[in-house]
Each structure stands twice: as C-alpha cells, then as structure tokens.
Amino acid sequence: MKALQYRTIGAPPEVVTVPDPEPGPGQVLLKVTAAGVCHSDIAVMTWPAESFPYELPLTLGHEGVGTVAALGAGATGLQEGDAVAVYGPWGCGTCAKCAQGKENYCLRAGGLGIRPPGLGRPGSMAEYLLVDDPRHLVPLDGLDPVAAVPLTDAGLTPYHAIKRSLPKLVPGSTAVVIGAGGLGHVAVQLLRALSPARVVALDVAQDKLRLAREVGAHETVLSDARAAATVRELTGGLGAEAVFDFVGVEPTVRTAGAVVAVEGDVTIVGIGGAALPVGFGLLPFAASVSAPYWGSRSELTEVLALARSGAVSVHTETYSLADAPLAYERLHKGKINGRAVILPGG
Image (tube, rainbow, N blue to C red):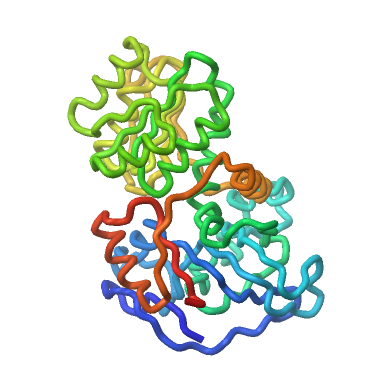
C-alpha cells in the first residue's frame, strides 16, 4: 500500500510503498477514507535527532476515518464495511482513567509503550490503518468522512478544553480564542453552540479573523501588541472568564494571562512550549491555568453528534495522498485556512 512517512530527521515526508497490514487477534483493519493534517505533525518533524521520541520511518496521521476492511480473531461489535472514526489517544483500557473513558489521560500508556497512531505507531496517512481495539472506533452514522475526520482532534481537543470551563461561561461572560486556525475556528463554533458567552477571536492573520467571523465570533482582534488592551476595553476592564490559547508561544500565553478575569480560566492548548507563570500577584486572583490533552472517548461521540446536528463544521481543503507533502508544506507556511484533509483513495 501507499503511505506518507517521515523517514529522515529534518527531511520532508515521503510517499512510499509499504506492506499491507493484517489484523491480529482483537484488531481491526480500516481502509482509510480520509486523514487529517495537523500542526502536531509539524512539531514531530522539527524535533532534533537527540530528542526524537519515535522510531523511524513513521507513517503520519493521528486523525483518521475509514471503513472496516477486516476483523482480527475475537474483534467484536463491528462488521466489514462499517464507516468509523478513530479515537486517537489510545490507553491501556484498564487503569482508573481509562475506566472512565479518559484514555487521553491513561496512567500506564507511557510505561507500556502505548502510543497514538501517527504519533509513535503507524498512522492514518496510508491506504490502510491497523487499529488495536474496536473500542477506539466510533460510528460515523452518516457523517461525511472529509467533514468528520478533523473532528477527531481539531474538534475533540477544543471541545474537551471548553467543556471544563462551561460553568463560568454564563450570560454576560466573555470567552477569548487565541489562534483562529484549525482548532480555533472550531472552538469559536463550539463556544457559540454550548454557551451564551460573547466570543472574541484573536489571530495575526486577517484571513483567519475573517474565518472566525464567518463561523460566529462576536468580535475579532488582531493579535498584536495592543490585543490585550483591546480585549480589556471590550470587557469593560474586567477581562475574560475563559481564555483558550491554541498557539502556546510566548506572546500568546502573555496575552492570555493579561486578559483573563478574576477567577477566570486560562487553558493552553497549543503546543508552542511557552509557560505562563502562576503565583500571587502574577495573575488576577484565583485565576487558573491548565494544559489539557486531546479528549475522552465519550467526548468524541458528543462532538460527532454536534456535527450531525449542524452545530459545528470544519473548513477543509482536500489533497490526494500523492500531494500530502504539499499539504504539509502549505501548513508550515501558514497557507491552510482551516484544516487539510488527505484522501488516500483519491
């Protein structure tokens, strides 16, 4: 089969031919219909050799949907031909967190060497994907594969982050979304669907601010040196009850800390690696800072239900598997508006 692999540190990914996988006991083989392109993949491909955590070559793609092509011995609950989405943050299935469906916070995954597809084990940017267990597959139930695939990360991750702050997003409150790209433009829609809060979107690019307005942001602000002051003005000096940073670099986390309200939440979702100092006098009183990861299995089911209702959708650009390296090149240059989706079947 054809697959997009990261093969050499510092080199661009390549489309290569690899053996077709076969399902072992309890496993499920998917024929991939769509795979999502994500900034996390760019981060993986920029790690230096001395700190690279995975074995190469690595088939990319941690967002995937497909149809069941074959079932390994003992795999139950599915039939060949079923259309499903892949829940990406696999866990052990037995620890206290996994028992709650929170495999994104599995307590044993690191020790057991369990990694998500595309982030340590072969991913979805291939004609076929091997899934370790049927519990990591969620029925599409009529959703279009291209529309659904970004929801497995670009939908699930902001949903998980926002859900934790919903009690604070009451009428008259404000939510700030920093970074209106792939995840951020979905976050705007989720906030509009789930809360009565006023939604303010920040970005450095005017095309992304336009997209944020199109999907429901009440206000858009250019993310420059005056952004924090502008948000403070919009909130009458009080700040925002919830701030979601989908970038995570030094300027954006500083802005997040500068616009959060007393008892507000700062949630750093972006993997830019910057830190926000926490201590008496450094942030407004009782402000909290968190850095969540992905989302739970039940939350993915909820996100897909929101998509079926029409409450959330993802702006997508589609590429063939042969053009997948171009999609990553465009993403790296900031030229993807929304999410890029790879179609391995053409």
